[in-house]
Amino acid sequence: MSSKPLSKRPPGMPPGPPRRDKTLTNTLNRFSQSGRPERHIEEKKPALGQLANLIYDPEVTEVLVNDTRSVFLEKNGKLVSSGFHFAAEEDLKQWTYDLLDSLRLPPLSDQNPTIDHTLPNGARLHIIGPPISASGISISIRKFPRRFSLKDLFAAQAIDERLYIFLKLAAQGQLNLLISGGTGSGKTSLLNALCASIPKGERIITIEDTREIYVPHSNSVHLITQPKISGQKGISARDLIAHGLRMRPDRLIMGECRGPEAIDVLQTMNTGHDGSMTTIHADSTRDALSRLETLCMMSGIEIPLPVIRKQIADGIDVIVQLKRFRSGHRQIIQVSEVSGMEGNTITLQDVFVGTEKDVQMTGLVPKLVDLLREQGLEFPVNYFSK
Image (cartoon, rainbow, N blue to C red; front, side, top):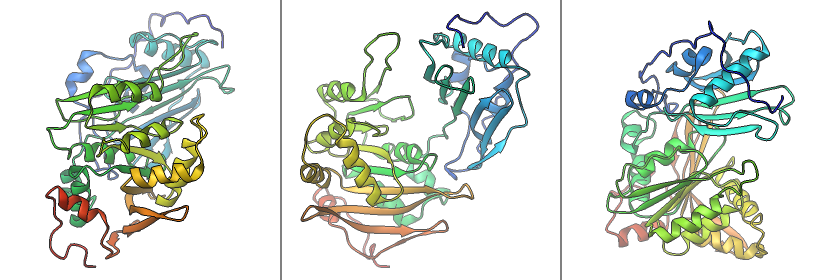
């Protein structure tokens, strides 16, 4: 693809009218999808053109353009063909140019082949083009669900009463939480629900690559990383953590640990910012610890592995594991307390374990009960009885 910007849309090719629909169809997988408040769309309208109807469809959670003739959708947790295709590669290029122009973003070029952006309705836009995409322009648009509180999830039967009580007390009691799961398993949705349970008197700083965390607190600041573009240095998650810690936060909420910033998140959790939270890609609570160790070793600081493990054991209190099943159902399948260390091994104690159908308590009483009691937070009588 040439670095020369594309010309504007020729006359006679108007974008298709967007179909706005705010119907709630599922709940968080149930981690459901609905449109954002209408006022956000009216403030700034992106040129969505031929894909508008797909993007505004309330049942669609993701739109994936592989090339001109291959456009897939995620509906109810499953990928299906949209049946739509662009007539020619030039049409896809023109659609991309119009969208980026309407968002006041630089056009794709050989020097700028990737775009990461948050659309006005909260959807995450990722575009990648030549020379790093051999099949031409590829587009991913992920729509995020209406923001639920833990109470909403309990009312919708996405979590049962005991899990609801546990997660609510964990958020209120300033436990450091690591939310683990695969792509599309509901990590960000759960993170937002937990944030809604944080007491209003606390100051919160959030850090992420694209805006996905929404904290319903007036005393909060949201920081977004900036990529390296055209020789500019960019601003990394590690840079923002350093800035955020100078802003007097009670808690730091990191959208996702995917690189060397993991060591900074652990340092934050270990230096008086109790109640901090982040997410990570992993298949189990034990795998989440291994992945966190690996990310910490990417920091460029030579820290012995036993020291990293001690930092993890001291910093993280609870790991919540989510899974998206082949049916499209999303479920919390494991909640583990980080209970300490035995030798050089981090010890975990499962509080909840589950399958696609339900989640059960193990009956083991975690040590965190004492931490919560110190803050005046008590579990109901016989709560941990199976």
